[in-house]
Length: 360
Image: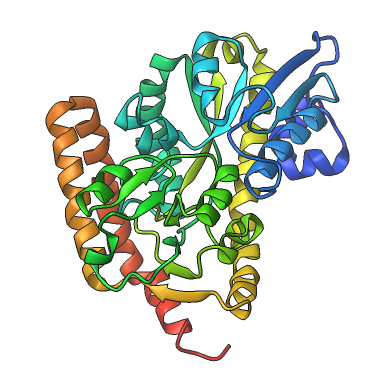
């Protein structure tokens, strides 16, 4: 049986288990560099990039190697898209909404307020129009996308004071990841700050930040936010499921052999699935530890959620009026979301709601 048959019939897990490398050994060795926008300490997200590189090496029998670099090693965390566009980097791992300063459309590749959850995002990207629409957009920046995994629904962040109503948001200096959230929060009086994760703790400690949102219990615990901001709110209505992406320079990807392209495609899928599954495994015990350490867990008041939704819809409408491409992608996502929410009423939502009332 040849290698292509093994890969087709055994699947990725089988190939890795048997140690069979699908690359033709006569091919020239390939060396790529991958720059992440995240620090090594975040083994959930950065670990996805490491697993991708490991899988590429294993599937190619060591003929295709990807060196993985944390934020700041090759370039600043937010410098990866410029590097890909200029052709000075082969691959990156990042959150697309970090780059909405270039174009608000970047947000749809990651998360938008009151958008898709993790499963819905995966479905829209891979079996709806999401990946097609986003790659048409990313082509302007000389890159194509692959999922790097999804965090799932995120928490609403850490605050130095209680948020009892919308009025408590006014004047709040808050770090947020980017995207359209900053525009929506500005309507509620929040002063948005966008900074790498590694800089947030000291800013909260010094009081130059009043609040921060990042991901969820496991990552937030690692970053120590509970030590400098005691109130932890939920849900993160701006990130029902945040998609992290691998971006490849289009010329670098096009220059790969057909088998090496297949290896990249397969290795990103392995890494993406692992990240999402890991988050679901590590967040519950991390939340228990945080609460045991006196974290004040709070739900957002309904008036905050309602005001956030109203502000977000105003932001979407404003961008639709300015950009036909923004409108096309947003409307496609919302149409997909409506069907997903309808189905959820009869499936996961109903099942999970009942199970949460039981002592299992």
